[in-house]
Amino acid sequence: DGGITQSPKYLFRKEGQNVTLSCEQNLNHDAMYWYRQDPGQGLRLIYYSQIVNDFQKGDIAEGYSVSREKKESFPLTVTSAQKNPTAFYLCASSPTGFSGNTIYFGEGSWLTVV
Amino acid sequence: DAKTTQPNSMESNEEEPVHLPCNHSTISGTDYIHWYRQLPSQGPEYVIHGLTSNVNNRMASLAIAEDRKSSTLILHRATLRDAAVYYCILRDGNTDKLIFGTGTRLQVFP
Image (cartoon, rainbow over all chains, first blue to last red; front, side, top):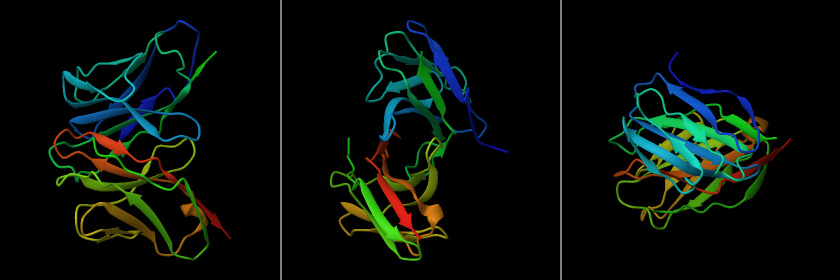
């Protein structure tokens, strides 16, 4: 079945470590997105990409990095520069070119700093 | 960027209609209005979307103001399974950027 797969579901990071969250989609979508959600809060955009080898910063990009080397993959690296990374991370994808296209979300990844 | 504003929370009893409002006064002409809902620790689920005309599907109805500066998601008969956080989202027609509202937490009482 087509969809978005995020992994791992739960991840623990030690202080000063970089960690990478995986997001893979087999929907042939051009646009992909990463959001951060703190407990009880809404979604904030970290990065998004409309096409392979191109991506744009969102509202809270500091301390994060992404790559888009393949259409189906948009990994997010949480670097040691992100001082408060404990949160729920959501990946999404969608076709581009028409703002009425449906947006598909993954099931999310929990990141905890220990 | 356009912004959206939603009430923090709303309550309903089972089998009653629910009207969830969203203000998006800076919406541009090509921005679609999307509604999603989210259960704790899960990814958001599609509910409905529209541009100018009112829309209906098996889950809900979307009423869009004539000036498009606001919209209302209508759940015709709330069930306990409708308890969730509902997000009003604008999709920028030029950049494909998704702009999330603050979300409305809907509580449904039996």
